[in-house]
Length: 320
Length: 320
Image 1: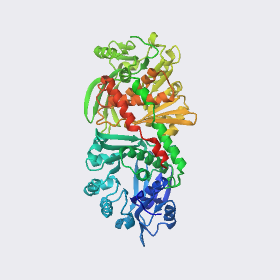
Image 2: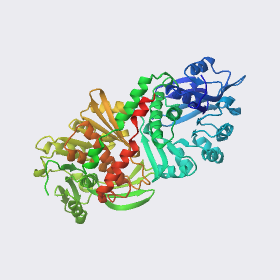
Image 3: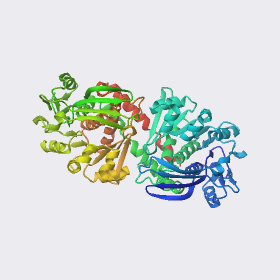
Image 4: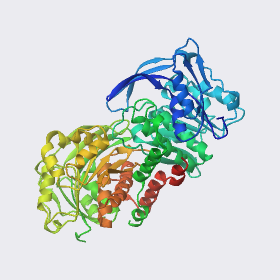
């Protein structure tokens, strides 16, 4: 089991979450962007080298479980005497908004990601949502620029570190943010105008995540800004959306790593795979959904996406 | 020019609107659900018999313009000495919310729709958003039940006339409401659960309109509730969303009238046509967008919908 040219290098938190939703609550369950990215890629059969930091409060059996499913965990530093990053949040009734109740950085305060030597040849790099200066330092450590660099970030970094964030955004291929963040980053209200502005900052692709309202992929094509839309699957119950964005990102990059391509058509497929994987995460608390998917269930869900978005084209346009 | 078996019978307001948006404002421009439905159907080349009421303040040249584009206007009562229905609203910065500044019922207070004799054979009935008791009275006046009855309504009627509303909903084929209204009507938060509940109230199809987030079509199929999703077209600028839902409804029913079918596949096509027509309405104030569409422009827009929602399926599902 080793890191190779189809493996994903992922940097992101491995942590504890306490989560309250209208459907229940969980105390100190395993979470973190890196964790969700890794589980999502594992489901796609893609190996992930995880770079992160935990305290000695983090259960070894959880790392064993991740390793058993195909993740490489030797890049996760275990800091003796330290406590793992902890986040606590409470979701509103509509599950789109949430309040942060607590953020304890703990070992994350001193995180300085060191990429294991054997992983510096990475072709597929997923920069999870951490300090943009650390995201840049990861890029600096690689032997050469990967085939594809995907960067996730959030409004927090736009508020306190916009310049370092813009500097690292200029170095990546794909940026993933939500609709409000795209407006904050661009100063534009219309998502098309926001996308045009952000694509000029450097990335070739922009993904705007809209939660239950789906995801938009933008690309600067020959005829200007092109876009692709993938809905979110309507779910019987959104139990806990924590990690949905990271599951999306993990599914997105691992689809591209598995087909070995980064063109617009492959990106569209990757958005659908990411959306399908995110839907499993939303159906249970924590990683319970994303860490237990049978491949047949994923295939069935991908078929649902196809079914819900297809119509007979010809008659629509001919009948005018 | 006469009403026939492929014509749409539409009942709804023909009125004046004063509209304020972050992009500008317009005073007393022509609006009303019936107006938008009629323009949308005309663009699809489908004749609409409009049943409505106006005061003698309503410009005859506007009725002439509607007639010239293929609408039948002899069902629009002109009440001497009366004033036309007037609505005034102000849209929030995000264009999803709006405040009503004024609602003057005027002649609408005494509206008692009388269906012209020649239109009582209607096969395609669009009941625009008016008092559910009046919607029921229209159904009662028809010679026989139409092929298809589509009903639009809003939270206002759920607040003050839930029982008459439920009674008329039980008599229609398709109900169109927005996401919050589907929650109010069903008492369910999840849209799938809301749809299941509402489909049990009578309609065979339910359309949940989500504005800039697209539209969901639900149907009780052999395997339970089936659904289809159509996104809204991302627009450079949403100038004025007033009438978008009515333009959608007009496009929806006129596609079905033009193909003469009411199965699930035809309904999907109709949702796409409705969404495309609604996008034109949003690009200008009032009926300016919807009343001036060239067929080539509509076809180009339908092609955009196809392009933004298609991906190469096979590789996504095989590559697992």
